[in-house]
Amino acid sequence: MRKRLLRHHSGQSMVEFAVLAPIFFLLLLGTIDMGRAVYIYNTISDAAREGTRAAIPFDTPLPNNAAVLAAVQSKLGGGFSLAMDPCAGTAPVAGSCPKDPTVPNTGYIWYSPGIGTPGRGQVTVKISFRFQPWVPVVRDAAGDGVVMSAESTMVTEY
Image: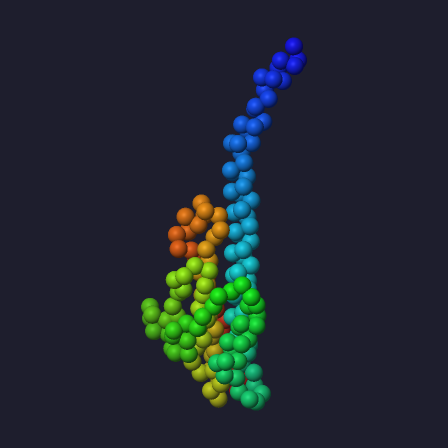
């Protein structure tokens, strides 16, 4: 009699797995994507801060745009595709600068004018990155991705 009951319920666990597995894997991969997003934001935030620090030293020679870009790139490491913002080194015009990246998983580096100019002033470095999730359901909901921006402003000491 007992054998007969087991035979009746033998497919129940398979059905339960088929119902719950997509939800489990969506949560698992969504958590991985969220971790990627936090990692990317922390990395671009640190890179913007490092670029701003490279623009404010008070010793000679005075910093230049190349030193700022080198500091940003050294903090980013590999895996990031960042280009110079078309408006980098110019004063931002309302609505046009700095620009947001249009290609997923790429970004722009923007810096304010006046790097290396003697006198007390502010230097700003901004990094914009378009994050594209890996999970298809989340990616479809995000459309072309989500733009993450990190900005750092410091006062020069030269």
